[in-house]
Image 1: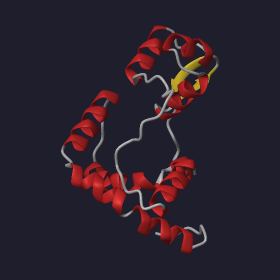
Image 2: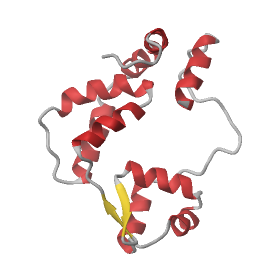
Image 3: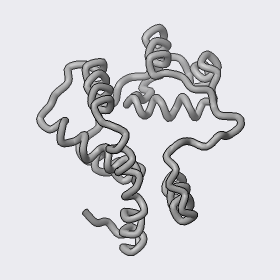
Length: 159
């Protein structure tokens, strides 16, 4: 919801700038590969231990683990396969700015199966690289119209 509110506020103020604004104290970034390597070395590490090694807070590690589809079972981080009902439930958490991207990506993913995380990551990286800036700009510029639709439906579900 915070992302939604931020975009709405920006659009309301006629700020359609796509570049990030300068801000102080930006959080330290880390790569998924760093986290995966740490888990390969010792899957029993806690969020606190992982955060200290990566020099980030526990919530950053937790969010990234969730994004990687990892959960902790019996003290070890393991991949979690979502059931179809979970996938439907989680669709509601996608930021409005992601719908343009994911809807287009879904067409390219139709009937495609990956045999490894690396294969999927390579396909996604290649797909994103194949899109020019106008593709992303168009997705951002239709957000006010999409937001109006959400507001006028009073938050009710629509297709």
